[in-house]
Length: 186
Image (cartoon, rainbow, N blue to C red):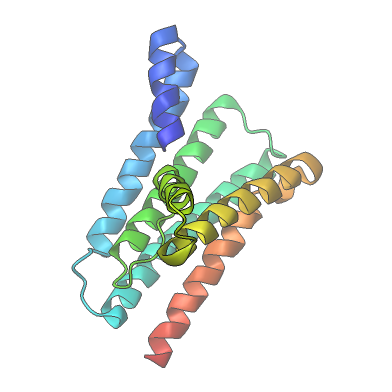
């Protein structure tokens, strides 16, 4: 969302309505996703079992939104019209907002899925101070995962455009399966 906030400001400064609309919709939908998932999965949910039960609902909603993105993407052969593109963007941003709220509410502090600039800064600063990865190992994994995910998605868009939305869909389905399995094993 950092990039979308920057693009929103640039769009205003350049008087580019399309850029303002796209970035504004992304930020607003992300915020709505955070708000909704925070109500379902508050950070005071308590024990891991209680969090997992609530997270299952929020991740299920995220999965449904990403399935909608995949359907819209396939229906347009990966090139949605302006209106459909904005709706698809909003669904994806809602899903990402929900994901961020679920991760923030986890009883075990999981690496954030959204504050990667801060994670990169902390990681590089620790390395610069000669401290090694240490407690920043989760940040390194998050940063590596984001770069790998972006690369894989870009490759899919370039080589197999209709398959691009399925990267996120499969990842969230896997997370939902892990949370659901954890509930049974707890």
